[in-house]
Image 1: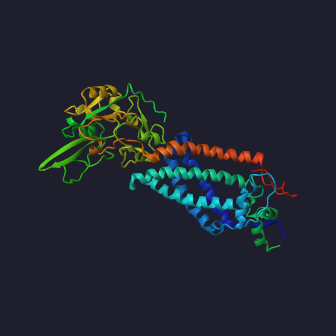
Image 2: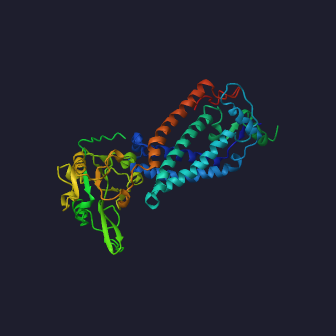
Image 3: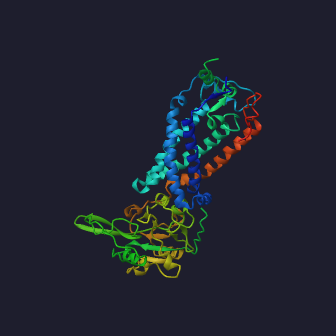
Length: 204
Length: 264
């Protein structure tokens, strides 16, 4: 028996990396627009005009890919069962050193909340982004509200993403394998997602 | 946002609306000095013309028509950039040097630095900045090119009635107060560069009674922006703290090291 079990198929991983790359492109090209404190980031793109162009292009790519990823996961991330409620009671054991065991399916509740947030944020960032893109075609109050909301949703997103990257890399060793190779070690699956592991390994 | 505004030496306009005769010489002088082309306009049954500021019309006289029985009367309003002491456009402009305050305290622009984001359109309390075919900001800059050379702005130079007076802002205000005029823009937004002596209420002239930077723009720049930077570094700090205190969830088995555990 192989030491590994498949967690994500290749198309899904490619989609995820498109989301990742476009997200960081949006971050870097948007920083100078967020505040004059970060005006130096415009230089990465050869000035503010190009940064805006890159931001718009990456925005379209991010919107399409992120929404696709969200819809692909929709069934798995919007249902919370009793085991998930158990997880919530102790924050998944992340706030204590001891061993903790939860009967978690493919995604734990934290991952579900992250996925739902990013899905909603993508829709809001995309919509407000469109208003900001063509400010002269929309009422001034709507563009003003969009500028504020775009900033707010970005702040929420970057904070969530920092936690996401931590938990998917050094916070939970072995997790990144799922996105790099598509497979994870059986021990990892048994520890983090026992209910899902039973399903995919035929209930041993 | 780090604006260096010296109230004592600040230059500005006093616009005495009771003196305006609606001749619109100011509109023409502005077009001439700033080399702005004429535009086709539409007649809507009122001699007000044009009907709005455009990318090639930096100032205009707004005709406020009122009918009382068989008598028609007008009030005239010189509409233009008001050169706010606390300028929303400068506050949101992400491109240093595109919109800035010159040494006379006047809000001026540089099209070459403008990156066409149009944030200034949203942030202006008076809906003044316009974008034309060049996709760059355009508005009254009180004839930046003239006043830096010690000359009077073209509109004020040409005004035949003394409705538009250019000079030291506080001196103009003192003079108007001595003449018992009701002023608009003396203190709002750290004082407007254009102060109006009005024969009527601000609302009659289509102005907000107490002008301010739009609320969502204020929240964006003064609340969300600083809190966001705090949130960013706070999140990174929290993750690092978690890593060294509670630590990662490691899998205890023999091969955990060969897979590069603990490396990013």
